[in-house]
Length: 344
Image (cartoon, rainbow, N blue to C red; front, side, top):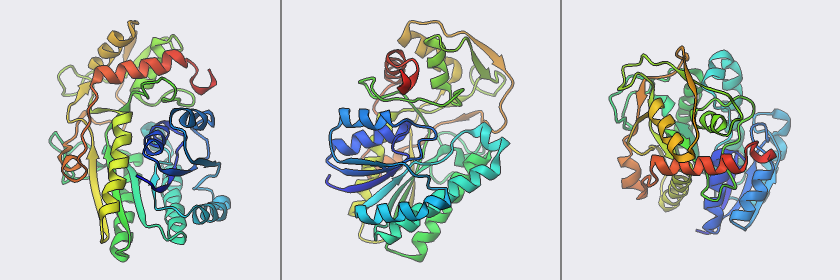
């Protein structure tokens, strides 16, 4: 792989792992990140793990004042395509502040599309989410499942998917893949990059890890009365390095297409684990106690969802390889070596 790729949100959790994967394959990268939920130290560590051509511009895709700078930077970079990971991602926050989520997530995407148009680079891998499915499909959920997001965050992802499909229908030069991934966890095996959320974590694994490292006293388990095997929510957890490989595989697929396309593709393991099972696995990996208490269900959460990932195997020759045990071990290595994240 010798490509020039724009990576929005490239200093973030998933973005940093995607950058390492692409650099290790010989790609040159332009990272666009406002560093609102990431840290510039991530770029240093990306370069440490995979030396190569990477440049960061600190700009906000959703800020109209930054638009001209972004369009100019992308045009001057002469990219072959982009991976779009920038955006807000907290389900609860989206329920409380939906207008902010629509403005930022959709606005950022439109700016990126305009920048790619100006650079004559119409190949885009979009970071979508399994939240587009809601709670109305039988598991495992395939890409043909009904889309009915249960929260504004999921709706922004679905609306962006539809927007990109409309753009591809209007202009056959566009090639897009919406990667509907499930629950990214884990960290790079080196322990040098990982998830470093601002404030109180919104996702399960970083909260478990902060409890294990004694940064937080106890974990709240939101709901134990779901119609699942132990009453807690069931999710398909996927190692972030497997996810990064999926992004590279999607780019390779688009590179081979001679006509326009707009595809939806799941990235998941096909196996669901409950919250209590995830806690137990992390306890084994860390050899630490994980005290928890039961709290009311969160609005917008679904009971159970896990992926049918056959389309990714067929189109990309990709599948998730890493086990839940490996996810926990790598996540713990990152957290224990960096108890305060990149500030450690």
